Length: 441
Ligand SMILES: NC(=O)c1ccc[n+]([C@@H]2O[C@H](COP(=O)([O-])OP(=O)(O)OC[C@H]3O[C@@H](n4cnc5c(N)ncnc54)[C@H](O)[C@@H]3O)[C@@H](O)[C@H]2O)c1
Ligand SMILES: [Zn+2]
Image (cartoon, rainbow, N blue to C red; front, side, top):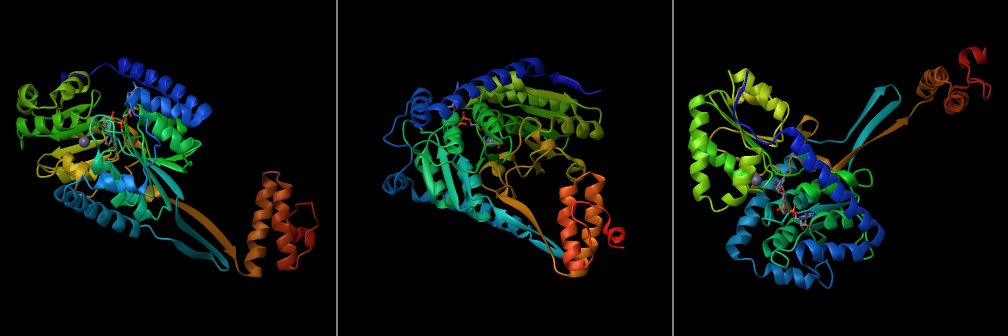
């Protein structure tokens, strides 16, 4: 049985937090739906102290923001975008349109069609998340989305230059300076000044993730990508300093970022706990990391690798870093997670910022049913069919007619029968829906 050397808040308290968030978001979205721009403006003033002339940046405002980005920063942004584009293009190439003849004269196919317009949310409440612009905007571009709207909150009362640069370089067609529920609400529902999109993507805090969830159905969403979670699976091959660094590295995202160590080593568990206390004294962002660690941090000591696997499958964390003597065994056997980071040389921060995989990943156990954002999320797979011979029209029509009648669908059966009459030369009386071989005899 796994032993908890440290536990986070009980599940009931986490559920209460979620219920409060749900209620807040419902109210805010209702306001945006009823009052459009006026509500958006009020929320922007209330939450971000920002009331510009317009939320959409003009070409010259984009240029002005970009001129504040240094050459070094620009080169770093381009380096990251190159890696992300490279991986996204390879993933795009793995998705092919198909067309096959399933039986003589019957042709079935599918086409991958990009969503026409998307709204990419780029978080910026606590940290200006420049990287989220690459992850959503650039990936949508690779997918072939025609209209890409990108939105990030103001940082210190104005558009954040590097975020604007990353959005623009990534291929955004419209850039909005709007945060939180007002951003995703306006993009999904549309206002007098903001044309609605077909789909929302991108990560965000609990309010943003919940707003996307509530808007799902009105528009598409990529996935439930809320406050960052991290999990480290480690054994005696590593030390407490590296585990503590990796846990706090992601706990700093906000006040509600779970960080969990799963290990079979009591020595490592105790060393990591001690290192976390030490690092929290010196990490400049300890203010939030400390709260996340106190409320959501866990250290779970397991009996062996099988139990470590079982516990991590249950948690289904957004990021899982594996540093053991059998990393490939975890890769082979794990099924529920956002993304895996294998071996001590890599880490979640690389994945967040630069390495090329997408950092928008499922949280709150959504890894049970979806992976993260990727080029495929922007593509809709649509089927089509065609019958090219009279024989096939007759044969499929006969089966079709009987199967329609099995369910009592006479009108459906007629769709088949009319073709059997025309293309098979069989006389099937209208509205009988009878198997026509007999009907024809
Ligand atoms: N799952 C993922 O893939 C992933 C990736 C990157 C980041 N993240 C997460 O994104 C989040 C970014 O959060 P953030 O807060 O820094 O920025 P954010 O941009 O997501 O949210 C900022 C907005 O939150 C709104 N807000 C703040 N307080 C509010 C309140 N009380 N009620 C209603 N709205 C309120 C404001 O409108 C503000 O504009 C972090 O939690 C981070 O962990 C997740
Ligand atoms: Zn992160």
